[in-house]
Length: 235
Ligand SMILES: Nc1ncnc2c1ncn2[C@@H]1O[C@H](COP(=O)(O)OP(=O)(O)OP(=O)(O)O)[C@@H](O)[C@H]1O
Ligand SMILES: O=C(O)C1=C[C@@H](O)[C@@H](O)[C@H](O)C1
Ligand SMILES: [Mg+2]
Image (cartoon, rainbow, N blue to C red; front, side):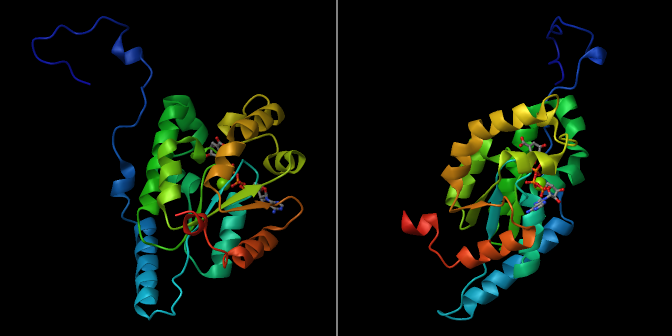
């Protein structure tokens, strides 16, 4: 922020030593005209061709995966994309492409700025009429705007659940996941308790991946996709 001419500068610490405040003010997603835009545009073209093909044509779906760290959203998402031929989008991977590593962003800007950016990229993807597999970050459902976007989107939202012991085996010591820093086991349990209701609230399908391979989980999701979606059964 700059000072208005004629206004005395606000008292406070030397600005050069102040930490950089969040949130980030530029919207980098709108400038992302590269691989993401190309993939979503191609997928939208396929969807509109399917819709034009006649009343019996079945447009491709969009799958959105939510759930806690270690549930396998990224891994199962890739397997599901390979199985269905849909483009794969991972909100954490997009975040890293734009902002660099998540732990560094957390320390510099804080969690609130991360959530705001995460919500922005998810809304950007959901705002397109493009079938795809979208894997969300573990805490994406915390943002009310993301929950609204999920409820209003024509997507199959899948809550990938996982038992605590298996999740902790999968995420190891929590490397690269700043919210688990310090006490991965205790923190994982606490945040699941805080978020479980939100995962269930947005989900059309709950799938426990404990003991399943990623490929098996992907097959189960596809097998379930003939069911009416939540938005269809509760208009
Ligand atoms: N079904 C599975 N069986 C065994 N290992 C798995 C399975 N799914 C994922 N994994 C492994 O667990 C680890 C975490 O998986 P992944 O990164 O997909 O989780 P995530 O839900 O995307 O987590 P985050 O919320 O942190 O992004 C990876 O090493 C992955 O290979
Ligand atoms: O559950 C969480 O809060 C997070 C999960 C990861 O996917 C990342 O989005 C980030 O590390 C935060
Ligand atoms: Mg992931």
